[in-house]
Length: 340
Ligand SMILES: NC(=O)c1ccc[n+]([C@@H]2O[C@H](COP(=O)([O-])OP(=O)(O)OC[C@H]3O[C@@H](n4cnc5c(N)ncnc54)[C@H](OP(=O)(O)O)[C@@H]3O)[C@@H](O)[C@H]2O)c1
Image (cartoon, rainbow, N blue to C red; front, side, top):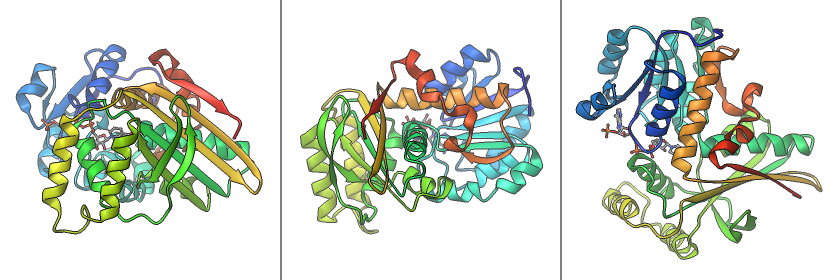
């Protein structure tokens, strides 16, 4: 693949959102004049040197690619309704970096590995904090035990951070999904012992395949104990599930976007077990939307300047990105080695 910094543009879809604004600003610093932030609000996009783009309109999206003509990478900082957006890019030889966390969409893009190889394009999936940094830590813990037979991932999010609307919508929809795993008590670095609740982040499904681990579960809590308890008590009532509950989901999405109890810190932890052998790694930081955006920016830079194989890969499958947690130290991310 290409080396150096090739000419051509980087389209950041959702490029002025909570995650996307960091992607846009970091990439503008590294690739001045090459970054095009996009979203459905054309005026807002243009104010930042970008343009209108809507991933809900596939024909319109193709037209944007045609008009720009020299797009090298599309960074998806909003979840499109279907995988066709990523497929459109890959079949045209355009790289994709996807911060999405929905298993259904990531699995659908992963099916396009061979066509992407044929087109010489690379997609990097599981980019962000969770999925993303969780996948990288899980790989380390898995290797430390010589191949895990079980992985437990823990994510703590700051309830005081202003999470973007699309991320809140995703989280509330995920709360309505059925879960079978049980909550667990675990020490979260910097936050003490917490009760963490199974949550359908895509990493747990991806890692079973990419690392060949038979069992993996991701659990979530917020920094605020009362809010965590209230949220998961609401889930247990079952009121959020079923087709008849979009009104309740909308109301919850609205209150999450307005109410902020807690800080903006986050922590993630990966525990691997092989028989009696255990290993754990963790990291902490502030502002998970910003750090997710930084992960996406670093991955994009890697695609443009290093040798990354064509095809569809999850972040933990690319050895060149294995030290990304340490590279984020400059942005306040601290990697913590735990006893396991
Ligand atoms: N992997 C991770 O760790 C991680 C972490 C955080 C978030 N995420 C994911 O990242 C995504 C973005 O989250 P966020 O917090 O940045 O949300 P956000 O602040 O709501 O940003 C979404 C952006 O996308 C734009 N947008 C919405 N619909 C669009 C469409 N159909 N076509 C083009 N642009 C569209 C929005 O602007 P307009 O409304 O003006 O179009 C907005 O700028 C979510 O899917 C979330 O689940 C992943």
